[in-house]
Structure formats: structure tokens, C-alpha cells
Amino acid sequence: MMRMRWLCSAAAVAALGLATLPLALGGEEGRKADRPKPPPRHEEAKPPAPPPQEADRPAPREREGRPAAEGRRPEGPPRDREGRPRGEGRRPAEPPREGGERRPEHKPDMPMDPDRPGPHGPPMQPPHGPMGMPMMPGMGPGAMPGAMPGPMPGHKPDFEAMRNRDPEMFKLLQEDNELDRRTRELGMQSRQAPPEQRERIEKELRELVNRQFEIRQQRRMIELKRLEAEIQRLREATERRAKARDQIIQRRISELLGREDDLGF
Image (cartoon, rainbow, N blue to C red):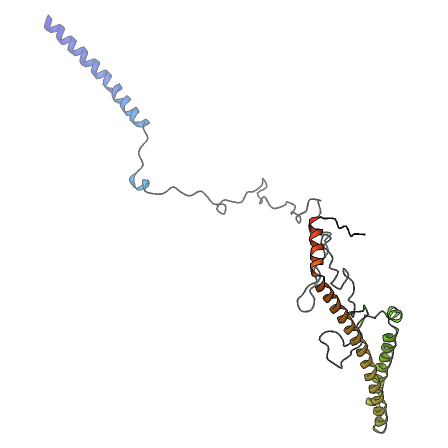
């Protein structure tokens, strides 16, 4: 009887083990399926793929299937803060002059150059001598002795002021200009005259040129005397200052120190 009970218990345990074995095997396989598979060894050595470039991307298209830029209104030229094109309202650049130079553009905030001839400066004036009188032609620096060209074209000396300030020099200048005009006319006549008249014209021309030379020599002598007088005046003033050296220096020191001079007016 006891043996029979033991066999029944063993059979029940075996049946229960056979029933639970498929469940245990199915749970183990499910846990293995949830775990991700490791990548193959040859794929691990490859670097990551670069991001797609702009050129590789397809052009965006609208709903109709045409490119997005097609059918849009083109953009106009760049505009400034006031809403008008940048090039509008500006003064066109001046074409370059001969030689490749271009006149410098004058801006409102630029100072005007008083020494430059042109629209922003006074016209060129002839040089003046030590007495304030316009220097006669040929007396400027670098002039050849004996060469006395006329006034520059487009510039006329102030004859009225010269008439009142220096009548002697004004008279010589008038005579010099008249002789210069007559000698030029005789020179043209001699070139166009027949051979039998050229000797007479040349004789008259020689007399006028001699007279013009004397007039110009007189003008030079007057100018030289005035220059010598100016040099003498400057020399005397320099000598007086040298004698009063101490007094001049002391007066200047008093001015710099703010001391009052009892000898003031």
C-alpha cells in the first residue's frame, strides 16, 4: 500500500514538471528576444556618415510642383534709411582729367583753401614788390635777364591803383606795352612784305626795339632803387634792435610774467 502511494506521488511530480517546462523555456526565449543584437564587427570600424550638404538637398517646390523661387517678384536694389535706392540723388563722379588726375571733390565740412585757384579760392594774383606795387614782368624769381613777358592771360594788373600810387612806373608801363604791340605788328608785316620793303620795316623795327629796351631798363632801375631802400630800412631797424637788446628782452619777460609797466600809456 505504501509503495503504491509513493509511485502516485512520483508520477504527479513528473507530470507537473513536464507541464511547467514549456513555460520556463518560453520565458527565457522572450527575454533573449528583447535584448538588442550587437552590431557586426565590420560595421563598428566605419565612421559615422556626414550630414547632408545644402547642394545635396533637393530644391523646395511649391504645391504646383514648380520651384519655390519661380513666380516670386525679384528684389529691387538695396535702399537706404530713407527708403530710396542708394544711388539715387547722388552727384555722379566727375570724369578724370587729362593725365589720369581727378579734381578732388569738395565736401561741405571741408575747409576751403584760400591759396588754391578755382571756385573755392581767389584767382591768382601777380606778385607784388616791396612797396606793394605789382612786380613788372621779368622781375620775378627765376626770370631770365632781358626776358620780360607780358601779363599772364586772363589776369589784368590793377592799373587804376597803380596810376594813383605810382604814376612814374605807370607811365613807363604804358609806353612799354605800346612799344611791344608795335614791334609785334612790324614783325608780322616784315614776314608778309615783299623783299624790297623788308629792309625799311627792319630798320623801323630796330629803332622801336632799342626804345623798348631803354624803357625796360628804366623800370628795372626804379625797382632796384626801391629794393635798395627797403634793404637799408631793414638793416637800420636790425641795428637799432641789436643796441636795445637788454631792454627788449626785459620787456618781453615782464609781459610773460604779467608785470605792469609803469611807462605804459
